Amino acid sequence: MNNEQFNNRDVGNDYFLVDIEDYPTTGWGKFKRVVNRSFRGELFVGLWVVLREMIFFKKHTISYPEEKMPIGPRYRAVHEMKRLWESDAERCIGCGLCEKICISNCIKMDTKIDENSRKEVSEYTINLGRCIFCGYCAEVCPELAITHGGEYENASDQREHFIDYAGMLTPLEKMTAGTQTEFEGFGAITPHEEERVKKTPLAY
Amino acid sequence: METAYLIETVIKIVVILLIFSALAGIGTYFERKVLAFMQRRLGPMNVGPYGLLQVAADGIKLFTKEDIVPTNVVGRIFKIAPVITAATAFMAAAAIPFLPSFTLFGYEVHPIVADINIGILYILGIMGVGLYGPLLGGMASANKFSLLSAARGAAVFISYEVVTGLSILAPIMMVGSLSLIDFNEYQVGGIGSWIIWTQPVAFILFWIAAFAETGRTPFHLIANDHEIIDGFGTEYSGMRWGLFFIGEYANMFFISFVIPLLFLGGYGDGSLLGALGLLAKVAFFFFFFLWTRAAWPDVRPDQLMWLCWKVLMPIAVLNILVTAIVMM
Picture (cartoon, rainbow over the protein chains, first blue to last red):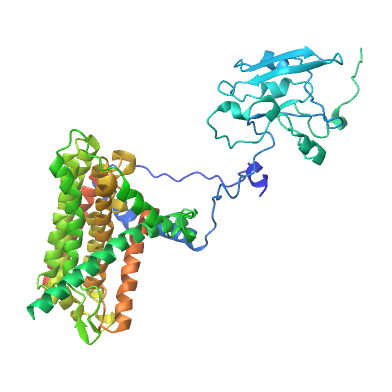
């Protein structure tokens, strides 16, 4: 299953105006309407429609736990922290922009200078009880480090189970297997970016 | 003779009770499946192969649920109401010949509990008594929705009793008997002698009224989920609600037997083919109950009354008059 059928929003020429007759005012008109409706067989049209669905059975449902709907690449579920492809190190540089922009004040972070004089994130928490999944943190992140993930099956007795910093980071096995996926939503580089960027026209 | 007759009758009653209680459960399975297929869904799929054991799961749930009798209800009436629904449904089955008589181990079995000569009158009367289930249950529930449903139920049942009685009168005049077996013998000459060809109007009227009598979808306003929750069943839980349910489905099956017996030749000449034919007709009418539920919207109570008193009843009376004139 892919996203094609969901992304196709073109209704084309399927729209038409419904023909609505004037409401009858006289008794004779009402009587004629009753007779018309009774003998036009609309009820049988309805019967045929549902029987047709039963005979040419095309199911429109998904047996959910076994098969899943594809979700869009821009889907905004619980956050993820990406790693650098080259060194497997964390992308996060501890700039604190996500904490600053968060409109529900749910991101808290603490940083320190490590032994290599690099800024390192020592504490990073997202209060999922407050998070409204607006995507601002992912949009503002200059390093494409914090992004939204696609994991929507959240059932646990504590929200914190989904959002500890170690759990948000891409696992190292995934990095060695090369299966870390880039986020395509807010803040991500649009496809074919390099073709579109031109030299700044400084024509003054 | 007396003892043998007694034993035979008791066995028949037990068999009918068991078969139709089970059929009520399986009927819900078929209803869910048919509705699902018509709405492009799958229906119950997880319990057992193709969800077949869903019936057992529902049964276990119904039997083990806590028996709640809410605070302000009229206890005794509240408790007796579901029993009335289920009991009257099964009592009506006494006068229905389910199959032609057959020989089992050298003993001739008539698959009818009591071949009384007022069979149809008895069935209609008992089904009319079935009104007291929803009526008493709704009035005793101390719940506004239940009360509304009881009022609607009383109005619908009483109104459509008129249509059922009047529509059936014309075929009765032709056959000259109230026994369903006599009806069957009247139509024994094959498809051409079915009463539906001489009484098509009565057939349609009786069929329409059957939907009101069983409270199925076009006339489902007794327990319209979107208006009055479950109507008279709102305060019921567990097996008390289950009895209402069994009563409703048993009623559907019995009406599905009565319509072919009255109008469509019943089991014909009593051969195996005729018996299978009767079962096929019953299956069709039961399927039609489910089919309309998927296809048709509900009507409003006032529309239902309008349909009954301004359309169906005059047509039924005219039908009787025309039949009488033709017979004279």
